[in-house]
Image 1 (cartoon, rainbow, N blue to C red):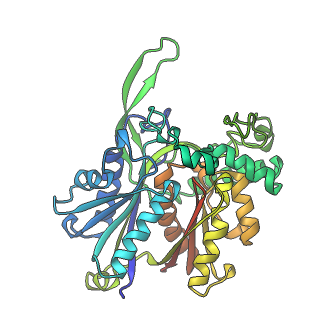
Image 2: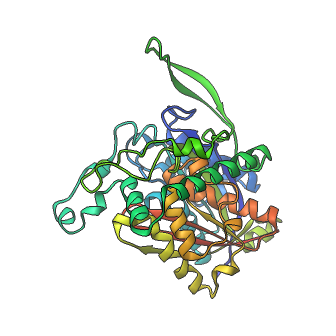
Image 3: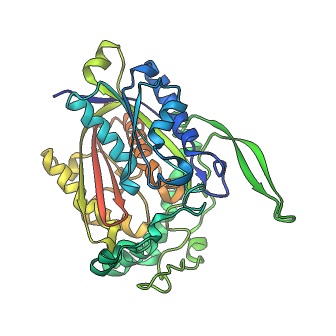
Length: 401
């Protein structure tokens, strides 16, 4: 069996969905941009990449039929480079890196790209949302499969006693950590600026226009957030039959809709050594688990122990954690149940303050884990996600200094 090392990472800034810089940018543009730059940062030729694995939560419609193949071609890869689109909803980007790592370990490829992309603006907010379609048998036996994510976050908060005040306190910490990280330039080595055109609306006249913009940083952080301001926000109307009106989840303690892409180049350790490359880290393993759909946010509580057990590790052996902040309620519950040290978890904020382009996030978290881990001298790191439909995923990485 071969080692699978990650030799580079590149991502876009995260732009606010609908109102942000990528609201008219095709997924293949974002995906192609980060694949191109990850390859360049790796110091290899595009033709050496055998396959591009691209995670995407909603690959339908505006993002293309096979967004991985389209991104590979956009990036300048030759026609001989293949592409596979993976969909495990919010776990898609992490799953794509795990897929790439598995191909390397088993000798099925020598160089892969594992990536993630999401255009919420053009797909979900653009009118294409296949979650609206139901199926008679599943609707009868497991109707919670069609619950909205907000509803499941409300369930977790209610069922496990995660109070509103604690959720708001965590959301404030996320905003503060991201603001501090941005001020310190801690995301600069991840982001590759992308020039594009965005749609702007004149509120006075209603006229629409296209403006040239450069997305060079994450747009979602609210550094002026206060606990008082968070407490004043009204709960989001959850809709659905289970919860007519929310109690806990607000625009302040939930992840933000965002568009973006992220990519990592994964190759065999042997090839990296031959090329004289200095990897960022080593892909060690991946695990998934299922939970009840109505509490999908607790998925990491099942996936993480499975992952650690397979590698003979305990929670205390992990130096750095990236646990996707879909909602403060599920993040806090997972941290409580797993016994995660807050000082080692989401140290530069998370999706509440940075944004959550579903299928992209796991790939972004992986790249960030490796770069931040190197800065901190960390040795082992875990990326873990909750996933719509009632699942959790976790990936283990060894971080190189």
